[in-house]
Amino acid sequence: MSLEQPDYSVVHRDGDIEYRQYEPYLVSETVIENVADYKVAGNEGFRRLFRYIAGGNQSSAKIAMTAPVSQAPTSEKIAMTVPVQQTGSAAGGWRVAFMLPTRYTLETAPVPTDPRIRLREVPGRIMAVLRYSGRWTERNFSTKRSELMAALEAESVLPLGDIQTALYDPPYKPPFLRRNEVQVEVDRVPAVTSAAMARPAQAY
Image (cartoon, rainbow, N blue to C red; front, side, top):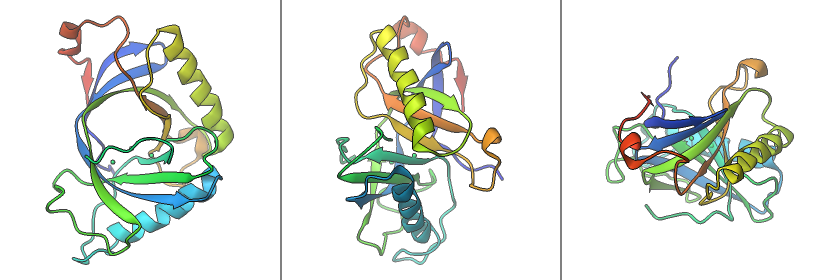
């Protein structure tokens, strides 16, 4: 089954790194406080958000599942304006998010009954992304995070927040077939002019 995903265009590729221009989208998100463990926090956040889309809202509405599930350390500044972000350890906790289907706005989205869940809009932004397969482990995340940061440093591209993880597949999918990503917002695209950015290479 194909799940709705955030709209983006690939504006530049540099080896294994994609630079994407994302359109704004809504997310439901929750913060798992005082939990340092990546997987424990991710599982708890997923359960909370799944209850919300399964009818745990004031309208008792069923909301379609989307992809990816995103996860980030709570050290990242969150603009009051949503794929699933992380730096290896987060003493204060983790933020886990589901994208909401595009038919919803902040005004029309079902209101969560769980006070630990909030809705917000993620603004359009440029993201640097490294895709990989395999298990959802902190070790894999840390390895790919280092690769992405090294690639950005080599191009003098500045990350504008913490690296996030984005998980696209259900847990029963074999790890070697899974689509996982590490992503971070960046200040620019390397060696690409404004005119080139206006002609996206590929749209999703």
